Image (cartoon, rainbow, N blue to C red):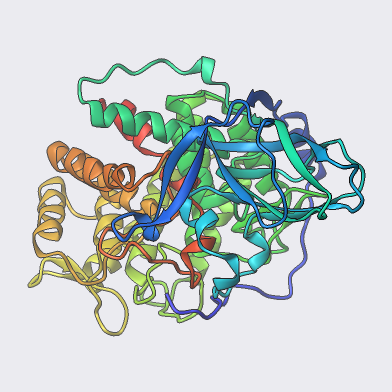
Length: 526
C-alpha cells in the first residue's frame, strides 16, 4: 500500500438512533472472564536476519522471583509471559539502598512480537497514529508502591527500562502479573484431537486469537483499532459458532450496528463503543452487505426467528442501497475512492469482487426473505437474475477463463475467489475456475488472512479439499513457523515486512480476521 490515508466513503450524514435496538444490545453486553498470569521467563531480544522482522527473543532465566535483582539508572529487562495476553499489568516496586530521594522514572514497552521491544519506537514512520504503539512512562514519587496500569494492553513481552532513580538507591520488582480479560469461555470448547499435529496447532492458535479479540464486542484487534468492524465480525462469528458458542455476543454486535444507521439506513463499517455508541464515518459497499450475510449466518446457527424478524429491515436495506449504487449495466461503477474494502491490495480493482459479494449476499437475502418477508421475493429474484446476467455478459472473459474488473479488465485473485463463492458459474466451471487460478496465479494477489480465508473456503466449496488443506497449512502454518502464538492481521510470505500503514511496528499480531482456521477445520471436518 502507499503511505497515503485511504479516502473513506464519508458524507454529511445524520445518524438515526434506534433506542430499542441499542437497549437490546446493552442487555446483551457480555461478562468478562478474568485470570491472573505471571511471566514465564526473562528474555534477551537480539537482531537476527532469519527471524520475523529481524528480531528474536532468547530465554535468559526464570522470572518467577525477580525481587532479588536490583536495577538502577540505565538498566532494563524484558519479561516473556509465555504466550499472547490481553489485560491489565500490575507489579510491586521497592527501593533498595538509601531512602529514595527522587522519583523513580520508569518506561514500559509492550510487544506482541519481539520486534516491538527490540526496535525503538522512535524509528516508526507509518501514517497512522504512533499513539497505538504500546508504551507507558511512569513517575513513582513514593516507594514502595503497587502499580496497577489503568490501560488495557495486548502483549506477550514487556520491557522495563529504568530511566532514572538517583545515585542513592536502586529498585526491585515483584508480583509482576497481568489480569487477563475476555468474554470467551474456554470451558465451552469441545477439544479437538486431530491426527495432523500441524492442524491441531493451527486450531489452538486460531482459538486463542479469537478469545483474545472477544471483549465487550468482537474487536478487530486488542492492540489496534480495538473496534467492532463488520468484516471481522462476520469471520469471528463463524469461528465462534464452532468453538465458544457465545451467540449472544454475535447478537449484541448485530443490534449495535442496527442501532445506529445513517439517514439512508446504511450501517457503518465499524463502531466505537465507548464512551458511548458512535458509528464511524466510514461506509463500505462490501462491509454493509456483510451485515446481511452475518444475520444470515446467525440465523443458520441459532434459528433465532425473533432476532431475524427485528433485524430483517436493516439487513434488507443494505441490499437495496447496494443495488441503488449499480449503473445502468447492473455493475458497480469503477471508483478510485475507498468505497469497498475487499483486501489491503493497493492495485486491486474492486468492481468484480464487489459485484460477486453482492450476488453472494442476494442469494442469502432470498433465503431470509423466504422466512420472514416473501413479498420481497419477486423483486430479489429479478435483481439477482439481472446482476448475474450482467456479470456473465460483461465481466466473464471466456477466452481467458477469468472474471475481469474495471476499465483495464484486471484479473485478480480476489475477483475469482468471490465469484467462486457466489457460484456465478455452474459447479463444473466453478471448480475449473479455482484450479485455473491456482495454476496461472495472476499478479494481483492476496495480502491478508482475511482474503486467504475466503480462498480456502472457495477451494472447499468447489471440491478441492486437498488444495484447501494444503493452503491452510502453508499459510497459517507459515505464521506459526515465523513465531506466531496468535494469528496476525497481515502476512505476505513473499514480503514479510509488508504493512499497509507504512511500518510493521504498528501491525496487529492478534487479529480477528485471522482466526478462521478453527472454523474451517471444524465446520468442514478437515
